[in-house]
Image (tube, rainbow, N blue to C red; front, side):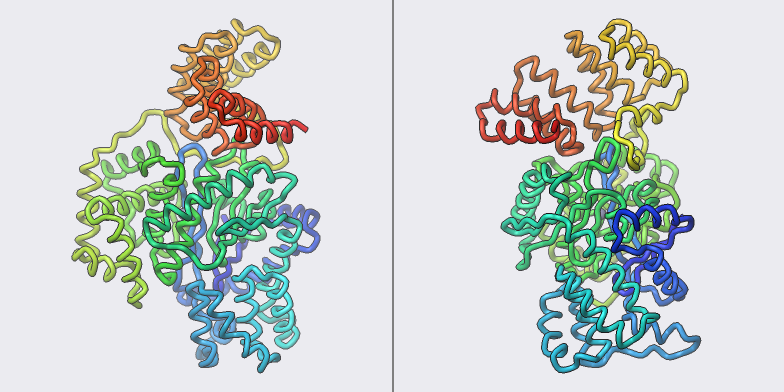
Length: 592
Ligand SMILES: [Zn+2]
């Protein structure tokens, strides 16, 4: 288990048994010193939880089910200086100097530009004031000026001493800088994107298109158009992501945390780091929603509101209507039947307290459904109004904001929402389950790794034999083995996909389509299913449907070379020669 505690807007992750991670990290990123970071964090972790008052969120997606999970860590509202005082038994909390308070509040609601404008004269006048230096370092970090942030934090350290609480923050800045400075920086109309060009350069165009489209659509819908260019950092591997996000391996694998809106920027993990990728473009669109909600609510929105709205809008960019996924519908149907819905109060301050991935997913499903309820009954304008109302209240939660806009107090709102949920009559989908992410950890063969997911030993052996036969071109015999495997393990997506591949090679396209339909229903986010569908539609000269299927591959795992070649063929058939050329270039690049 790991424990997340956010200290003055920075989450530190205390891991038991983290030594191996620390060792491998320090060799990869010599500038980064996780042990020190954790040691610094452990000092913070002694802080009593009563001091914890503000939620903080990080986000997660579940690759096969097209849904997002969110982890919440706890935030300390007090500054590091207040905490330092509070730690001494019985000591009264000191507060920031009066002229710094409004600046700290600006930073609290992520208005880093306003905070910086207020700080600039103070830095010049009070260059040895630790409070000023610390706040300036944080503000610079929130503006993405990492070198300035590090300089300011070091200046503060020199005055306050190496053992001071600023140390942990300085290490976070140092590690972020160590990673980001090797990345390439691109500016689009409204975003600044940093990524590892060598590995993830092929993602840039898709990422830019998705972000800019999200910007336009969400701007039209909610009137949100940030003045500043939004920073987006795409991390090439889990180690870099751990460092910069302060998440743990458990957060990624158990809760599926692969995206994050934190420190006034969007961060996410390259789909290359996970077996079979994940819906990475939906994820970044989703994170943008968190950015919007944070800004429109002065960082006051509760978790359920954040997650529900981010989930609801995450597919808007690809013109996919908001729809609760089949996995989420299944979880909601079960929870309603068993009377074990998770209350919204239980979701704050953090979903990390929920025990299982299923509970975390249920919380997301409920949140999305509650947002659907507001939209269906009151419209998007009401959501916008609720966010505006949140900025006007000091009250915890959305109670008064919802009351002012809908006329319902929170109890009535929850009761009405439950009626709405029951009226949807969601049904369980047989054979469906919550998928857990798998980190590659240096392994490269997704299909071989996937074999481990086949539960029945007999099915696994049959499928393996089928693979060997298929490699030798003995397709008939391979199909026999796959069918036997399927008898043992009826809902196995890896087997359904393997069988379909062999059938496509044998031109048995109708048979393959039937199995792929089942695979898609069970795991709507498996890239191989869409890659096979693309091949079938190309064979049938249906370029439009082929393109749709292959777009899905790119949206989940853009590192499958053949998908780019097939997509190029589809574009050529559609007369889209420029797009075809671009896809061929990526195909060549991936095959180098
Ligand atoms: Zn989220």
